[in-house]
Length: 438
Image (cartoon, rainbow, N blue to C red; front, side, top):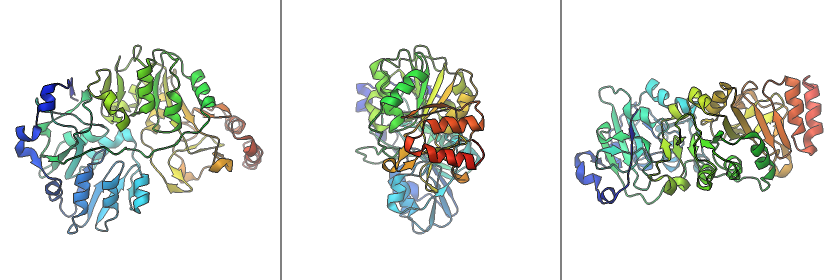
């Protein structure tokens, strides 16, 4: 693992990497031209969009599979081609809107790097930041499993390309070197697309904030799921003191906690005094650029179960689409159709189980469809279970908190019914009785 102290100076701003290493400069089309029939192609998070667009134009290819961790427009372009197969562990709204097809590959984020080692692509392309004068290549807005794509042992004929995105920040932490790449793709980029789909938090945050205030002590280390309820509720805990951050994604809510002074990492036991993450969202770029208090690491570090467990009073806060009376959580499927993916949520759940002082928390509005549908249901379809009844610890809705760890099946059901919307409780009781758990 390689770390670098990044100082953004005038020298860096004036430096032109294409003049220093002209032999590495390659176009997206030339990089895509290296792909051959039968190849497995591996790409990064965020996706290297220009490379994927160029690859999608290759009508001559056959039997080519392309792994894109969280597909955006480039992945969607691949998924609309009959001669290319898109594979992804996390499905997105962009794919659905484009009518693109993707083969779901259920892989936890912590395992993405090892997945690439077990299934080595002949051609890999990762998005990176602008190379620095000393030959350092910052990872850009994410490391995730990209380190394995670049640094893995290569077979004869394997190629690794970096797509240079000039708008991503220079973040302290892990990095690459120019010599790690067979070519660096130079494209004029003016912006960066969000990695995850936007989500809208509920209008009434107060019950969720009050619950988190009770469950998260001063000095705790926190992790947040992405978007909507979890990060917006966490961002309201600005009255807390000495919080630490060890998370999958650096998002708006966690940035707000740092800006307020509530999260200063002063008492952290893993990566002391540092906010640790493996992915950064665009809204945090300015804050992260050259910030010595923030540290980007590979997914196998940020989401390592033992590392998570070692953190002081770890509190993992994630969302859920639904939970059943057995205590099983669905975080990725809607009406039996794959909607997203597991990401790193399961890794944080399992990390919390390894520590007596840790706690995993699921935040979830009690209803969906304007109150017509309960998110607490009798039983989740078996293929939609993300976290089992052995994994789930605490569940919070606007109607209360249910502590499920070490509870019997009957206790789990009773506690979950007590935090369901009152309009749905009687029906849930009847279902529990029919299933013989109440």
